Amino acid sequence: MEWLLENKEWIFSGVGGTVLVAAIAIFTKKPQQQPQQQPQQQPQQQSVHQNVSISMNNGAQAQQMQNQPTLSIEELKKSTTILFIDDDRTFKIVDILKKMGWLNTKLIKDINSLSDHNVVAADILFIDIQGVGKLLQEKDEGLGLALAIKRRYPHKKIIIYSAQEDGARFHEALSEADYSLPKTAEPVRFEETILKVLAK
Image (cartoon, rainbow, N blue to C red; front, top):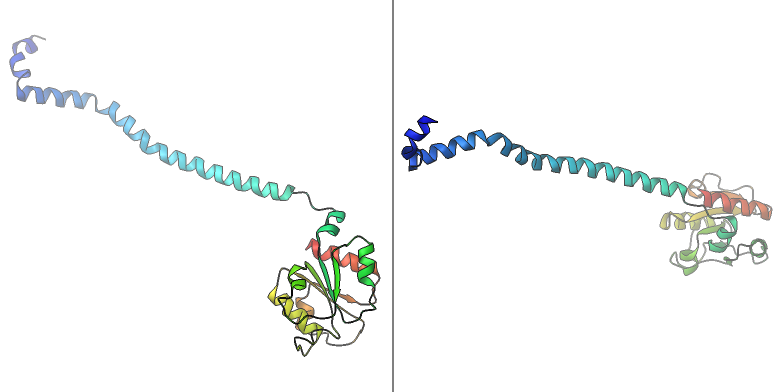
């Protein structure tokens, strides 16, 4: 204390003031560094929290998708559009399916374009392998037509059917179609097939 009193003129001079400020800065340096370090650490902590919340959100979305209620058969019957492409006008399955509740079911003889509005609107297409595809000059008739539609619209469900038991068993369309069945199958089999392909 005596030293301070004896040297007060030097302490309050320019050189002494600089030394005094430097000494104060050294003694107070550690407390000043801690607040500076914390803001640098906070962004890291925030990014960790953001990653956790993102993964939690993705988990919640996955859980919501799993918990989504599936449509009942009655709702499927109202919302599903089914198209039969068959040149046989005596084929009664379309009328039977309508009576079973599949209201958006239609039969056409053939198409002259893959962009035909009936094809575009359909969710499920039943294609007979004989007598159709001629307007598009498909040499394999219905098999060629089924293959062309499936490749143009991979999300559409294609079901091939035929009255003939023999024929091209190794055609590409048979492997790319979603299902195949005999034309003589019971109406219940047609409905079961619709439900199977919708469940895929």
